[in-house]
Length: 255
Ligand SMILES: [Zn+2]
Image 1 (spheres, rainbow, N blue to C red):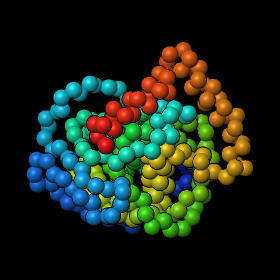
Image 2: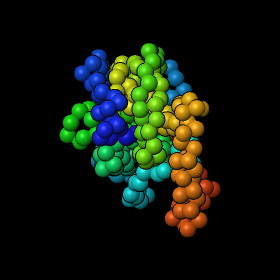
Image 3: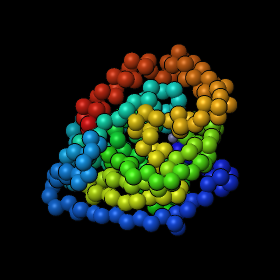
Image 4: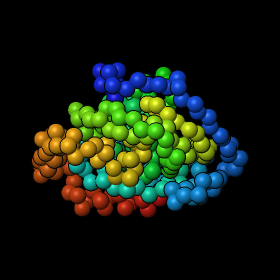
């Protein structure tokens, strides 16, 4: 998600001061720790967190890129992560680098072609400011209130539209160290988290716009599609079948 420059300043106040947040942490004691979430949900189960610096074998270094609509991974409903190893931690660090490089405030794994329930965010969009979060298997509950504000997305560059979302939500997740996060978020952070969490379900921000408002973007969406198809035709992007096959490999490893 991007809320950069004027769009953010004009349409959404960060409201981070108003966030009445708290987190509970469960420190890890053993080499491999299985954590069972307190929250009963299909999103949560046992996750093994590798705490050593030993890297896993078969660890091809890869460079992540932000994929654009209508790449099929953006419509993939990701499965919960069952294993956190050094490579996944490196991928999360790379996602943060990409997010800051693109002046975004959030980036979900789907947006870098990974079918895993993890996203990174920082409502300030600046590396050394604000709160940087890496959230694994997030769960959003107890929505309260309603607020419309303008959103954008790194996978749909240049497209901005009004999206109505709950103002306050309860967030449950894990961080990369296996600490459980349980907190109520509101304001801009709540919006960022809901936008990114949507990505993990294959939902894009324009899916939440009214049909009437969306009609305005028909042309822009058609351009994204034409661009994607021409890149696929020229071999710049693999076929959809190949892309979907890759997702299965990632799922086998982490989900
Ligand atoms: Zn987005």
